[in-house]
Length: 144
Image: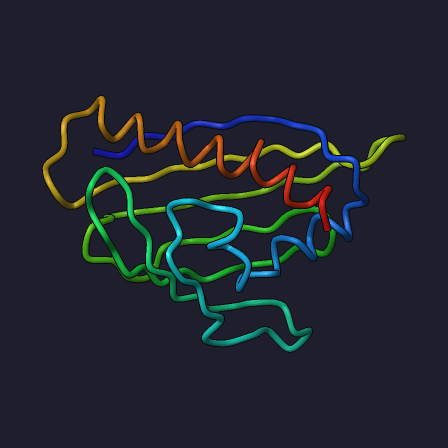
């Protein structure tokens, strides 16, 4: 079962600072309670993360996920699931718009699981991920 959602938020930081925060993959465990570890396995020519391996725990399940990142300048960054024992899909995008006081961010997320879980549990996982990817991420960006 795949579920999707989105949220929008403002960050008191430039788009460049927001993108730098996304690129700080090694800090994922500090800003996301579900991430136990995160390592950049390969990088794009510009140094931005390309392939990331992370250990993630949610809903009593622990998973090692491999994702690949695609960067579009300072406009957006997306990541897509490549490999996972628990998830069947994960697609996410941060879309950035500069504002007079910082950056407006739209976070779109779609997740699916391979293991049988009740729909409400999958939706709860999505809601938690959207909160981590918005409110918690904004706090992290602004504290850098």
